[in-house]
Image (cartoon, rainbow, N blue to C red):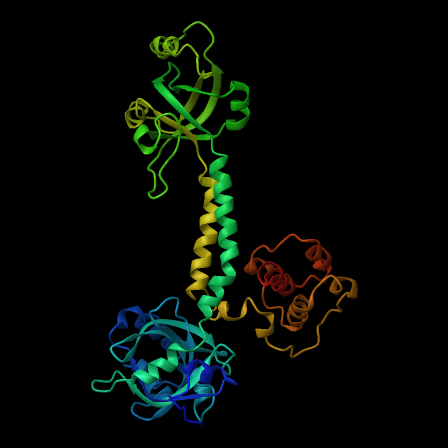
Length: 436
């Protein structure tokens, strides 16, 4: 195994042919952040004690770690650089070659540990299960003298320089997700543009227990009915907007809105006053004299809360009446959270960001597809998409389409639908939506 010449640029050395890297010491600290990983690690070992051949009933974790990385002896670790910023983070897993490597895993999966740099050591602060396979293109096997929970051993700065020079898959994933984030921002902007905001001057409880708002603005009652319908309405105080006349909330803080209920009636105020609310607003409307082209409209809301008096106390005397857009924003927020989990390797597959955006990272088919591939369908695909379909068709059909979620409703997907293979939809959806 070649020894790395530290006078050479680390990035150039590591990426060349994906060869193993040799460092002086690999110091792993499982104690400093033990509360973040020991419970899940212990449950895994206890569940699979038999297949792993663990005999120590009191400390199976130490027995397993001593088998994988004997303390103070030369050993190897397969490492992925999961850093997302200037602070180094890595994912460590056992080697797959060695006299005892078959006892490191169960069902083709082995423990892996998230770690970060602290005072010359790799502090373990997370546990995940990963495939027990040979190092992929985004991984490097690092060899050196391994120390578990050392008291006086430290890694050299050159050793960390090599680890920090490993390819950063999170940065690559973030670049590919940037267009998706821009698209979600655009959709959120459309949602807010479609939100109806009315400036109201008075509110009151009607005889039927509903809340009636006297609004004023440049809107037509008929169009307002079509826009609002029976939407759920929210109320914001005047101070929540940068303008006293129109809804203009600051973008640097989240607004606290009061939900009042659903709209049951929208009517113009051109008639004989029928309530104290209309009478109180009459003088103000006469002063304005409609010189600015504004009209007054009454919006009646059926409250959600049975305690009308308590709700009325929560609703300010003057403010803004808004249609609720929570239902439109929730899917966008869910997608953002999913992207953040994906970028941070918090999904079921810890290596997903490394290969999802490049179908060439997928394994070579080991079986002949059980269904014939329609040449007319394949003709609509580019080279990467065709490779994704071919590899998916050769893979075992162990999953259902529901596990992968919806994919794009494109003409090519509809053409490929007769193949009726769930992995085809997953592979084609990822290739079509994200790789291009």
